[in-house]
Image (cartoon, rainbow over all chains, first blue to last red; front, side, top):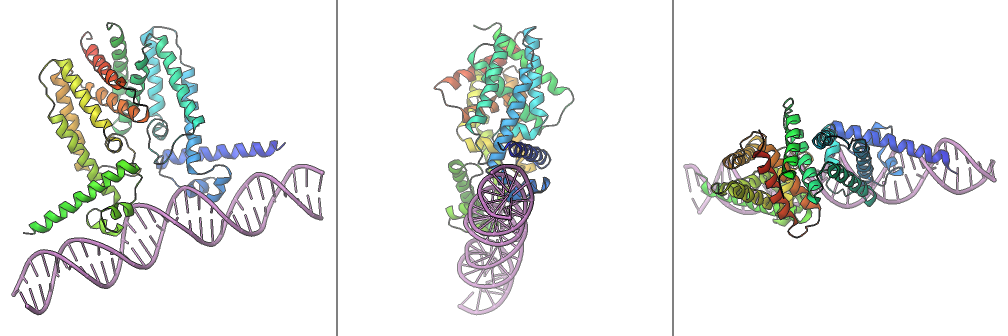
Length: 191
Length: 191
DNA sequence: CGCGAGCACGAACGATGTTCGGAAAAACTA
DNA sequence: TAGTTTTTCCGAACATCGTTCGTGCTCGCG
């Protein structure tokens, strides 16, 4: 029952989400209003409350969608091969994901939206990403518990810097490889 | 001439800034209004425009003040001694500064305030910090140009994680030392 | 047909940052 | 001291924001 309705419901929800992403990319993650978003899908602001409980619920859906995208990308990462090459591939994948959409990076990894806290269900997706990353690092020989913390801190910070600094050619590529070298070097000769 | 006036002016500006920091610490960096801030210093909102051009100007003054504090702290860092110990001291100083005031960390290193861009004069202070950090790292043997980028990315990221995760005893201390080890290890045996 | 559920809207509320004009107070000048 | 100018402060108001309420509208189903 109510199949048609549920389908139309979901479709329009996705249209609103897509429009919200477009606004976030063009006007900044928090630089758009519900009235603008509604207008961009041919509605008025109150009608959005049929599909979402409020603006924070929209951010929450975007948060979940972003982490689902990341989960899919790192799920395709090859874990076999030379460890340092595996790590370089992972580093590049993370960095690209961070950099290719500044608004998404701010929503997922920085805490840019003033009142917003992700829901438990959305936050679980974020923890899935950390778990998957831990697998990748462990397969490459980085099995210490703090490796994943250092890794995420480093690459989140690097991506933030790239967003605010000038893109100096292949500078970031070299920086990435050097960061991976740092990880590998710290693992090899230590205790 | 107009000494008395200028002095009172500056004093009240500082009172407003202090009250803004208190509000930022208790209600969140963006969780306060001009009306609240004015009330906390015995004024009404429009009167704040005598001392600041608007809310962003207040954020800008806070931004400059925060970087002046950091500049003073890292200016006192000892640069003589065993390199790894110098680096550990610097790491601890940076991390402590980041962590001891979450609102300040968000204002200075993350881009949490929606419309705010620091003024050129305030941004120059941020570049002074980077320059000073470059000196410290170079004195300790880390003189590659990308060292400072990796350093700031790593510690900004670690501080952000600490702010959102649970404080697990001396876990962060070990993480810091391990990060410094990573830097030193990457410098010693490489090219 | 009638009816109930889902959808969309206008109007409005409280709160926000900001502007304007005028009143009070302070500082300076003669 | 008296007059004038500058500085400080505030009430009122504006546009915009997220959000709520009440009301129609349009379907599909009996």
